[in-house]
Length: 350
Image (cartoon, rainbow, N blue to C red):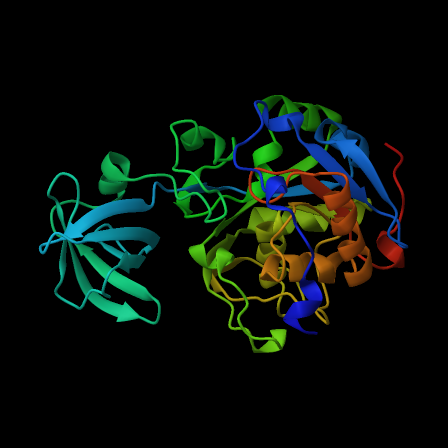
């Protein structure tokens, strides 16, 4: 398929610039019918869509305060977006400056602490911290790296709201946004219902916002992200299969994590990078249903969701969401959709 196939018209007014006052106050578009019929629900209706045999798989990554502002010795401004920590004092980062810094360039942060450019890897730069580790530097001087379509500076409230309540492992530069809708009472209620829960870790990179620049989508080179799926997740999936339940991924990152760990056919523990690009033609091995936000036109995330739910019915659902003024992207509303195919079309009446 072609990149242009994944275009849809989106009024800029529907791009959520701030979160709602309450995490669970968002809307939920329910897409379960094989012919594409949708239901307009509230996220609070989610417990009626799952059963005690189902398994929810969350991504427990946490967003780092990864955006740093510095200056060269010449005085010119440099914006640093930490992509990945390679060690306490070494990082990969995106840099925005009037001229691309060369190896040996020193960047001074707010407290005159120094970061040195030591090399380059394609679009990313290798940085070395001269005075302190990167984690304390981010705590002292860093800002929440809000997505580029949120056209305002990060605010104090974003430190909490652009973070899931269950995140526990620092390393992401973008939130697994489907998880932003869950608050502590919702998680407690799901546990009371007996719904199974498991966690994997995929540290979302800035590449998640990288546009697809080629028209033939199979030519797109996917960015890499760090993933860890442990034995407990594999055991939970096995138990769910035996009970006849569904594996429900919370977010596209959980989908990519589970499917990456099953690339050899069976789900097994995995630790390392993934570059998995899920596009039309991909055969899913693990995930039966998913909860996700609404994604950018022509993005790899929309391609993943369209592959999972069926191209025609997902694109129709997006057009419905636009007509009904759903809120889009990171701070927007959510979808619940089942995997396209007869096995996964069983309907639940909310």
